[in-house]
Image (tube, rainbow, N blue to C red):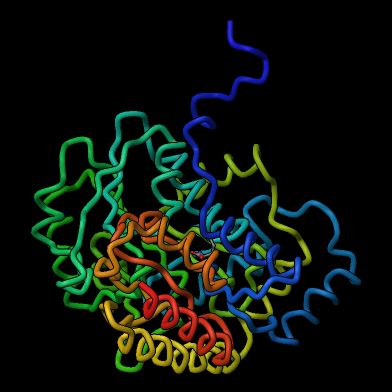
Length: 392
Ligand code: GLU
């Protein structure tokens, strides 16, 4: 008989999020008075725009303090549907939208309601570290689709085709991507759609959380708009955290075929209920408001992406595929001869620089640095990295 506090097999196999834990460790070291530069978490350093904060405060004062509809405030669901229809060219009705506790809960719910033990999730690698854990929590296994820095970390449609088995159930597309910053072009999405047409059992989830964060010359395309004939098996995950600087608000959404949204809503009704009611009114102001705040922050991230990218390229032993979007750089530092975990531990101990080891994202040759930090902080981080490299 197991001891009463023995963890379930599920929990026993679970890894805590390294992005969150490294960021928390860096914050703690800073609070302890240590000289730390953190380029770890992907979190905008901007305040949530004032009109959004004000809308949430007004909703709170107006008494939006009780349980709300599990699937989200009707006005917010409608506004998200309208945004998807108009901005992303993915015709969507309000009933096809579930408001979730961040993009993470959208993914978690979807994995739970779609996947059975024995199912396979196809995951282009490098990948954001929560996808495999969520797939495994749903009882599925993960089949990785590796891509090479030498080929710009691009997913080859032929590799996808070759990896599909009768057990393959769900393909994850994350563009702009975390950690590589790769942005799938329209032509690439069309090529992937051609593969998917040959495999009708496969569902696609598009994590579009970085959609507004694009390097100049790049455009975000929603897969469901590029391949409307596949829309009945495509889901979109997105949220307010990155575009509107609302990480702590925890508001995201899942959009897609209604019957699955109904199931995900039932799951939410038995787990968390509605997302914080008054916060949803802040999100409503954000999504129905002018986009200039989003554009202004995205422009700053672009400058910082360039600053970080150029600085990294100039450090001996660093090879970088220039990120096309999101706010990360994922340089290949294998020339330094250290595994990524050892390297990140040494960077923290020896020069006080907190970054995330590539092994957490499926590539031990790389490390991930976030450029969601003030230019002075980026300059400081680069200087620490240069100092470290010079000593190796
Ligand atoms: N997605 C961000 C990152 O990768 C935030 C932390 C997390 O949720 O993993 O840093």
